[in-house]
Image 1 (cartoon, rainbow, N blue to C red):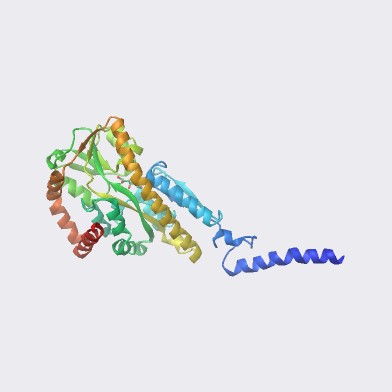
Image 2 (image 1 turned 90 degrees about the horizontal axis):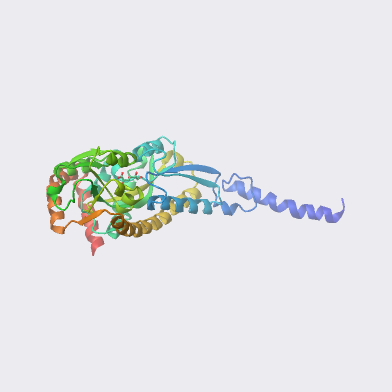
Length: 351
Ligand code: KDG
């Protein structure tokens, strides 16, 4: 064989042989393609990520950002299939699917999760936070971590918190400005016993319901009202079936970024780091989008004809007073030390 042909052959074959050997070393299984580093050490995987809210909602935009980051950092090795608007079912159904390893990711509100980790119920206490930054401090702090650490025993892994937001009441009957205005109103709540008992304590008639059923229940007047952050009220067009919006800001609801433990335990350390970093980075983006959107939604809901009323601090105090026995009851169930720790963390964040 002519000498130069032999040299050329050697020059070509050796490097790819080397790459293959290196590839195998760190668990990459893609047969040693030229630039393994581009996949961040990831294997070919297709994962299903489902949420309850729409693609245009800050939750949907956050999920798209997560997909973008993971696919970029793994050179497209890990593909994130996204499902919006409860296509894969509501929060509780998707959470159960994660436990069974039938789905990889969902980002529910903490409220419907109290059936799994009851302590998440502390975030359903009214008027805990005055602004989202206080919530960030508590959720991203030791208390938030302590609650995430309760998930693995239930087949779930929590990668952090995103923002659902401050909830406000809408209804088809009247403006709600005082504690008495709640009396007799049929209100849809999340599947959460603190919310149910709190609205009962105000003399309302609450009904627990999955989010995907709310619009038709309002339209058919099965219920008079519901409560959600402004971005959700607009994204799901509740203004079309609800004339009144009362700015109660009565509860701040976090989202928790959940991964199936069955799936998580298959991942390499590199892959886990990519997923964890992406959930945090996309979470920061999502919180920002959420705060901007909630501001914009108030103006556009007014422009779309909703009759908006404020609720005075004095009336919020009366509402809180009326609900106090419910909070005292659940503080015992969830752990008074934990509740005390939450309020102390909030005080610290307020300084
Ligand atoms: O995935 C999130 C939604 O499904 C849900 O949590 C939204 O706040 C919500 C509600 O009222 O159900």
